[in-house]
Length: 436
Image 1 (spheres, rainbow, N blue to C red):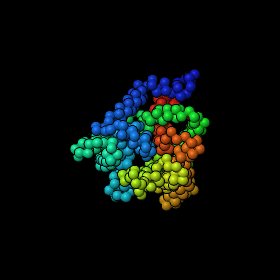
Image 2: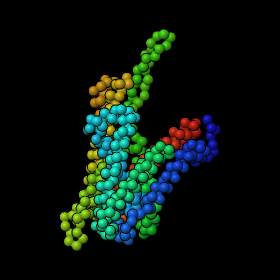
Image 3: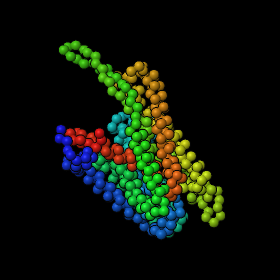
Image 4: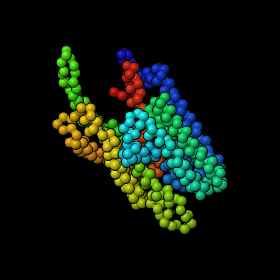
């Protein structure tokens, strides 16, 4: 074990990480791929009127929120405007289809080979999803006068460029997962969100007349990050005992080992917020295709009702619906994950049991009850974090900063996951890590 250093623990761990050749290579590769991703995000599609595009984003808050997750790529209408979100959509669809389709369910039980086949199907599903999403975006931008060329061939070329940009971003993410540090897809999303923070912070500092409000806004954000960290790491430990037989001196001895199952309070992670945000934004996005700026119609009313920066009392409807959907999807997605894991069956097959609980159906009932109770905490946490931007704006009256709760959860989750992987790499080499 290395002797204790006089430097701070975090700083010393960083020096230790860069002193190891293989770990240093992984870190530098991850940073290099993020730089490549940022370059790709600045490659624009041909035939785009930049001035009209900027004017459209200035008057449409929905686009501004979606642009934050692409790291400004959508505001530039670059080839990476969709980022990796078609892949996220494909992964969610496959996760929902696995318990429903028997063939996919059988593949999921075939171990590594089955998971690889499901992963391959997911990658193929990205192409039609990205094509439909890219075409829809281009039609909308064309209708708003951002794209002047309406011929079929240029449109096909732009759709293919958007699909290629998405596939390239997914490939970069998988390179990070295999050769770098952390979950590559999450880090690509993280890079896009972080890239937009400097401009957002700069806009906040420019609003000097709102200094008190900005200070309160920052405090709310810091408190929210602390709560996200607590609930991300919170879990309920279920004690489990395993009985095993050991031969010793020609005789059979029964031994028992005790461990625990960590059931997370927020087992669903950020997926319920993605579901909820998609459904809440969808009516407004569809209505934007039919809005009449001269003579307001029903589409104008839907557009006003389903936009995140709507004034009170319309804003209460949007954010109340967002809160309700986040809570509902947290329960829905947690139940899907729990059923796929089949913890009672795994325990029974491995000879494990919960003390005081009979194996089989009784164990399943007990674990279902525990999951339902702790998920209330995780679901209400997600709902409160979902409406945090609205509450912060109402308290501080700061309108220049468009901070997303989903973006905060993604950033905190990626940082925690990456730190844990670095910690594991350092501990394997008998170095002190980041986390006590």
